[in-house]
Length: 255
Image (cartoon, rainbow, N blue to C red; front, side):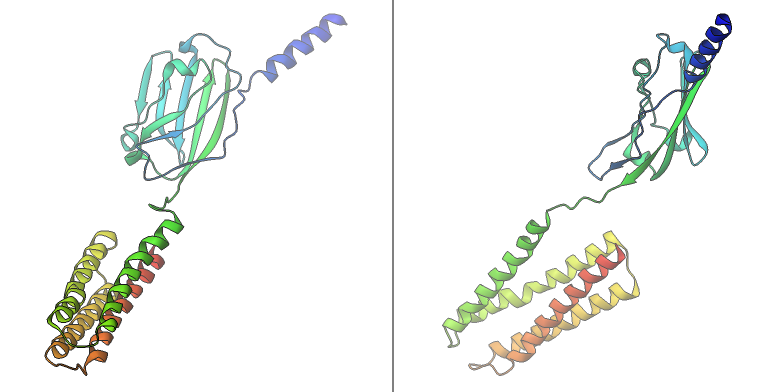
């Protein structure tokens, strides 16, 4: 009777140890700042002290992307994940994490399979990409507000001295004429970020129209002692500002 009980207990122990136990990690994130992406895989009950008894396989969407065969001391990444690798000595401590270059990383579910002689197990980890803002929201607000405030304060200087002068005319020209730089910068942003489309072309045309109106208004204003074409100048600058706003909204929606 007792030998039978002992045999059953030993069998249950063997069955219980036939499964490798993983530290469950549901997902891991990487950002633009990462140079290397690490997908963690930790086995809690590795018992062997000989790396030749270990076999590791990483899969992505059902296809093998990396294989390590301890018996052959061979690591074999797939062509699409050529930079993928693990650290073999760490396998004896249960660490089978996959490392790869950011250029090879693809968002999705990765499967880590580890075999130790007759024991085996697997775990699934989701790789996510997280967008990180270059500046914090508060910093973005201040970066936008301070230049606008500086322009408004500069414009206020023309209200203090109401009479026409060459200095006022040159100062007004320094505000109006360089706005063409905004159009060129907007064109570069569109080309780099999303390419040209009918919507982006319309925004650029609107900006050019605003610039033409502002330059015409400026030329009419400086040619008179008491300018009467200020609304034309202001409307041109307003159209440029409106086009900038539309461009910002468009880029936010496309993102």
